[in-house]
Length: 426
Ligand code: ADP
Image (cartoon, rainbow, N blue to C red; front, side):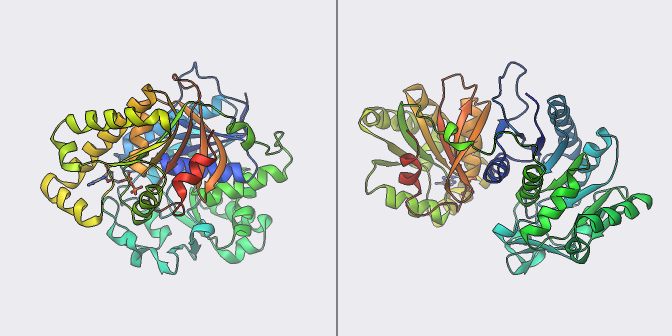
């Protein structure tokens, strides 16, 4: 199987977001969880997104993991590799975007790399090198208070310069509006001046289409799902996609088995979705303090679900309102309580799969990552969207047989998300 486009994503939900964007724009896409075992047989696809967890690890670890993933992708024919970062450019001055970009380019023989986190669909735009989140510059947006990577500078040329040895250039909107020829000329002049990375402006999808066309002629680019959209559309326009984009029906062939929902997201949207689901599906609200106290609460949850699951879907939720969450965090610490609850929800998910669940919805980004890791699912084929940004996923090479999953992060999905997801999974 030769793939046309490879991507290395710095976290799991970002990987799903990109894989979903590539699929919607005509590429048959698989998302792998880590670098797959050599024995994993992948279906015929145009693109593979390797999901890593390297956004907030030390740069040397991120570089090593990304370089191994790049090798794996190149060995499978990827002519271009996109390093998928967050559309809010999450990273500190010691962060990983610059070092990984540079390392991937070096491995591919050097050359200049286009970098843009723009994703207009979600309000991320870049103008004169400055990133805007909706109507606010990055440093005035909620990202200024991000717990891990607070962003205090909207000027991405400056941000990237602090992470790199070489100078960083800017391809401005006027050049991009003049088309791929003008962008290539500008890149050539930067190349001559020894620049190895350029921030590219983009406000509209047409800007990303131009950038995608230019990036495809280089070995490596760095960006969010917006650049993925540009690359996918450029590949489709080039006539190199044989699958014709007829991808998603295949991904939702029925798998049978039982169905369940596990929730660890405490976002406003998830809390509302749980209230709505409760009208038609039995919901077990876990007691977070008991979860932290020992295994009894997990065992009780499995027993509760095990009695009901043969009659229809069930929901098991750790999710709680902000006051309850803060109280628990002040007692046990933010990271410790979060991690312990993710472990508990992942054990519950795995036990339900053990009892015959083959259609599983998980709410919460970290909660989903923990569940997918515990279930040791090697890869997913991307199916149709349930809600914007949340596709149905079909497992590839799963030890328990084929499963359908929906992994929903934070505020995604309408209030009937859970029933809508189950209605698409048979
Ligand atoms: P989201 O996508 O909404 O951010 P995540 O799963 O990424 O959801 O994060 C939610 C975090 O909150 C997880 O670490 C989860 O374990 C934790 N959590 C879940 N329920 C509770 C609770 N009742 N109290 C405190 N933390 C909780």
